[in-house]
Image (cartoon, rainbow, N blue to C red; front, side):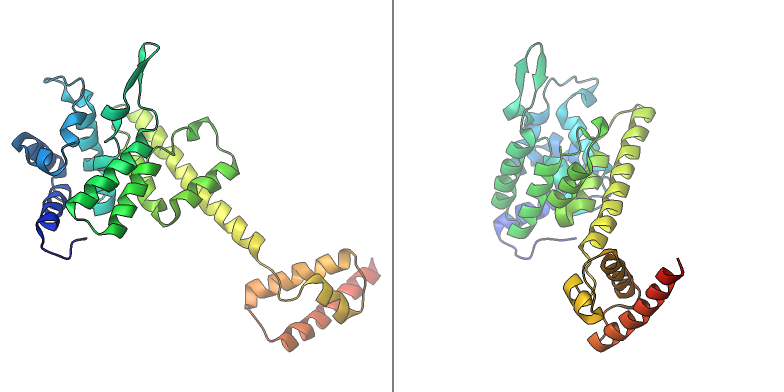
Length: 270
């Protein structure tokens, strides 16, 4: 997918970055761009990710992790750029507390940095919004293994909105561990989350459905007062709508009359 429509100097720079991240061998393309200095010219924040770099085991630094994440993403430009930028704020947010290192709020800071850099490079605003939002949301999955309520699952899906699939692709790619068991467990958890989101969407869709007639209309038409029979009628009317869709009001009332006679007969036999 090519997001660029103009040929100004800024969009030419964006085209260069896009060409790198969309290369068929993206890991080698990124390392070559780092080594040549091209990445430093396009995104000067990227070389700063080489914190605590070990020249022999360079997978120890954030830069190598970032490139590994990009390499694991599908060939989707927005996801690949989000992967490239997802840890962009770690140098700026790094703190040493209680003998450890933290990067608090690096996703939010990184989203702002991503927006600034991609805009400066000349990417279209809508695309910049999309990539920046993926960066902002990239850490939301953390903590899922501790147990999320249905409300938390709904909130994750609601925040991601139309970016949900891309966000989950980014989350899957963000685990670069060589521990196969840990990797398999992460993918299992993401699969589970996706299944829960789908199940809850079905539940919410059903809960939001309404029959064509409300309780007041049912009581007026049948000439009855409140009671469990009204609930039974509404349940039947909802199932009618699910199976046959919207019907003419006269048809709905005729069907309701038929159901009501059957319901009374069944009730009288009990």
